[in-house]
Image (spheres, rainbow, N blue to C red):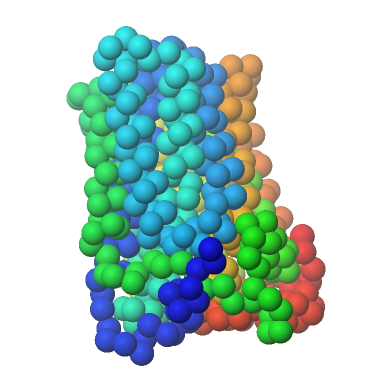
Length: 450
């Protein structure tokens, strides 16, 4: 049965005609904060658990692969389903599944029944549930911003602050809990965070929030797509006609692969070899994330006055290669922390800009399927990051892999900046998309797809 158009997500600005309410935005941000904090705790606890019990960087990378591969695949395929079922229902149900799977890991280990294949299966289930859950929360942000009458750029800036806050609290708590109580206790904390996020979305958000997208056609005079694959194809066709979004996605896809290798394998191996242990992982992550919160706050405050292109590439220049190189050359901890702080500040400007561009250019009713495809493509390298890093460290050692990673990061972000479609970054500033611009105009202005 097709969704009732009367119950669809409102078009841009529709919610602003009613009374202003901050409850939807606060609710979505709180649920996202809680769930992401649990994920960040798990990002320290799970690799350290595998590394401590097996001593193998390759197995650590394999576990990271088994979580992120289903995450990316399921997220890519569930966009039409999120649009059809509604992001609210998808969010609370998938968070509940993630919580249940996370609880099973320490319970089975305590009974001596946690084999490596079973661990990989549970981690894959968590990743598969997280994908659509994260997507659902993300696409509720524009509706929440409309209801709160908050400008779109400011909402994405606040969302960036929220993500960075989770990246600060999660690693700090995760590192401390792992060091004091062990990684399995941290996994129980992760499960609790998912359960709380599910409860907030299911109970705390106002009625009518996050309903199914309306089934209007993309262009007037065309029938609305009714089947799954037609909906999926509609999202793919729209994304293919957006050169700027495609360029951002490809560039971020490469940097995400490198970041996954860095966080999932390279930093844990560096922490073990340097004698710092899980506490130093939490410390470096917390320092970088605290600085990123500052960057995101500035982005939220002055986003409407920033020129996006120079800020975007300056952020990548600070947040990318220096983190790899400082570990490769064995710098003392205070230098490492300083580099993480500067890089975190630069990184704080990136996601607010990317989020604003996406929400401005993609019509609301297509957000689920377009963002699912875009995010999944940008995250496609993440499962391979840990896998490749684990194998490379085993074959060549830590320092050469860090050095190569830093060079590739620098070249990727700087070479991508030469493409002509970056001129489009400020074209739709501050406007939520209600209908796509003509295809011919997009192709001419953007200079063609990458």
